[in-house]
Length: 135
View 1 (spheres, rainbow, N blue to C red):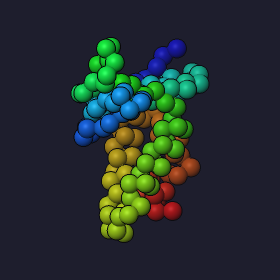
View 2: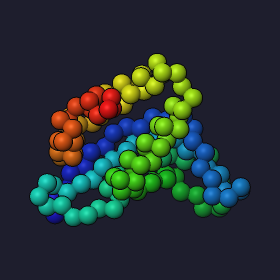
View 3: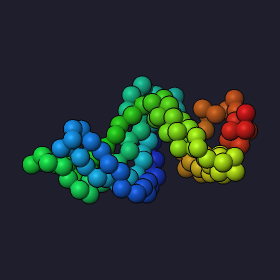
């Protein structure tokens, strides 16, 4: 089955990942990738989106990997992303919220240009992220 893969760079500050108190890793985001089947040949892929992190500071375990990958379904990524954005802007001014909406709108437009096989998912929204962000 033919697949399409698109990868975007992810630049973050240091992120703390914890298992237990002694299992603390410091990571930075490296890239976000989406792997999908070619239209018309789809099969369910419960982990179509991968978020890769480089491990900077290792935990207490003698064997620590060099990278950490989250493999998520598109619906889980959407729900997690919406909740994270909502949490981050809950104490922001209306101007800062508007700037965030504009940034998100532009990011969606940029991604649609590099991921044409995803555009069809927004057809009912006329592919205009500004329209659905304002509603």
